[in-house]
Length: 271
Image (spheres, rainbow, N blue to C red):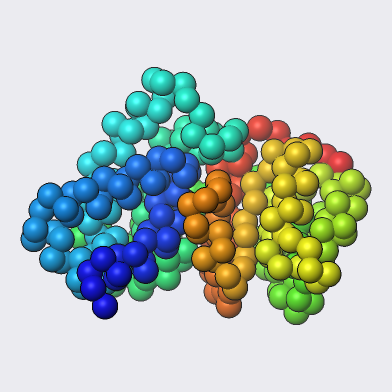
């Protein structure tokens, strides 16, 4: 496989990481582009990317670490929205939490790197990475509990998510296996968070079900799917929170904490 093919294969997941790290698709993509441009301008850096995901993420993190504050200031000064109310709130909240903590958390959960691999990416000892992850979880878990709508057509997975959500101290706003059931659930109670699959029981789309909800209220959404590539195309606004099936519960827990952290910039409506 050529270098360009290797990078292309890992690029959708790097973009996912960048988006979750910055809270904005446009800002995340800007850092990914800057990383690729840096590689093109530096032959040694370009050659290092032949090592796969770890050197690619390592290159990205070096660019992000040196440019994060400048980009945040530019966004703030321009007053431009970076992807909706919750993503705009995310930019403010990212400035209030230690960025390096979020790097460690995302790398070891959303991106499924080991603490040792995350340490290589971040130029840190393994023990330090584990400490940063614990600090990030502590900061994020201070958020207020909310109600969660689960849109999932596989009963066992739906039950697993219900148990997980409840164990985190949240309420279940409802469960749905189809787009119609999701509409009915939201009409009875407005959720503070949505967990959604893409393919639903009657052939309807979880994307359409989420669009229905977002037309009514602004709420953070986490997509949990076996087909992440269908959402990571760059052809439409992409979800900030995307978990791949089969999932680890730790990954879903982290995504829930992050989504609520970013999405808590306005009071949640009660249905």
